[in-house]
Image (cartoon, rainbow, N blue to C red; front, side, top):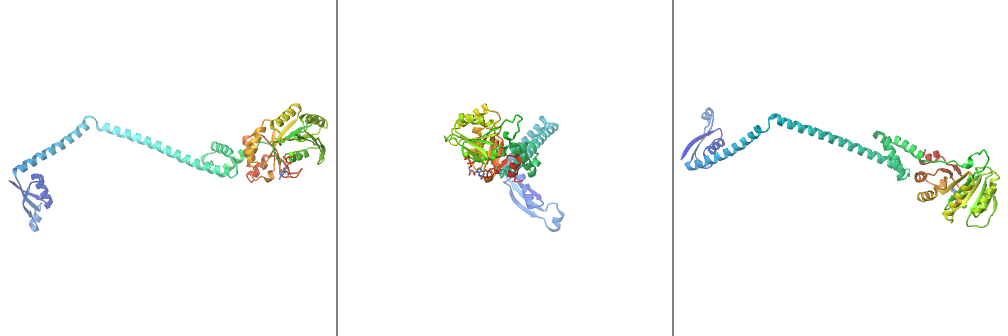
Length: 375
Ligand SMILES: Nc1nc2c(ncn2[C@@H]2O[C@H](COP(=O)(O)OP(=O)(O)O)[C@@H](O)[C@H]2O)c(=O)[nH]1
Ligand SMILES: [Mg+2]
């Protein structure tokens, strides 16, 4: 057996020396702890005497060698790699290239973040604008048109400014309104009369509107075209001559006769229960045979926006303008804007009550705008 004494500042340190030299099969033969003056004078205060059989010591040494050679192999591999292919300069170059790429990516991320932020801000500003415009009962089409304009004309900051957006909406809506002027207001040098036809496929305050319009012109002559009634009659209404006819032939003859008086003619073309194509035929025939003819489609504000739009679209090719009755019982004039967005026909007169002749208004942009926006 081989014996040796190992020292350590602690018992564990001395035992670790035993394990390193003799391996796990070492036998502890003696331990000694130096205390007091003896301990103070020594560097190591513990002493362990251990022994190991020769063959156990040989096995332990061989194992140690194998582990050592494995570690040496790994270390030499690493140092080979470093020294063989990449110098320190090359590594530094790779690192700085990677840093450059990271910086580039950081810039892209920052740009995308700010774009995302401004798009969110814009979306919420546009949402606010839509909410405001919706409160005026404007149609989705009209709102989209205004929002598109606002997006195009206003900066991000301005979009958040409700007053600026409101002014832009006011301007846009005002530009959408088309106003027409009645021919019977015009003064002609040859003193020729105008022929104003008013038509509608349904009861819409048409006769009242015609009477109110006729009252605005000195000495008006009214012709009542009634398809469903075969008695022609002659009467007076509010001092105006009213004649009734029921065929196109009679109508043309009546116009020819009345024209000689050089006073404006108003035709109440009663289209209720009358085929639409017949109404259109009569209108084009009058337009082709006489000058100074104007045709108005009569609509009522008590009918739905959709219905009025549909009728106006059907008559758009043969009429020159729109007259709208019952505005006094209409809660919101936005329907007038929504309608004109789809049908480009000008407004000429508004009926503002049942009383003839006073409840009539010459259509104006200002009155519509101030009514809608509560100015
Ligand atoms: N409140 C209100 N009533 C109206 C207006 N225009 C016509 N009316 C009334 O609506 C009803 C139908 O009118 P009328 O002129 O005969 O319509 P028509 O059948 O289309 O010829 C009548 O009672 C009129 O007094 C208007 O602008 N406002
Ligand atoms: Mg009528």
